[in-house]
Length: 89
Image (cartoon, rainbow, N blue to C red):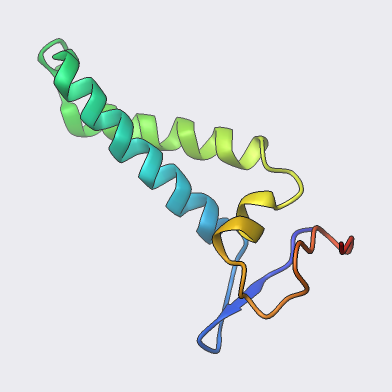
């Protein structure tokens, strides 16, 4: 089970860094698609971007079963370094 982490006295879910990573990937992908002219082919750009975010968030959550993203994005979270569901290094 992934552990919660602490930032400024606030306990955050392990999903928070995954959402932030998916958001960054969505912004990067959106810029690339805009430069390629992809958005001229779609009817509703906002729906496409929301769909991309949902797909990328699902991929990040599925591909990160040990909480590696959480350890990378929050190295000073107050937990043991590289704590993956009870396994510490």
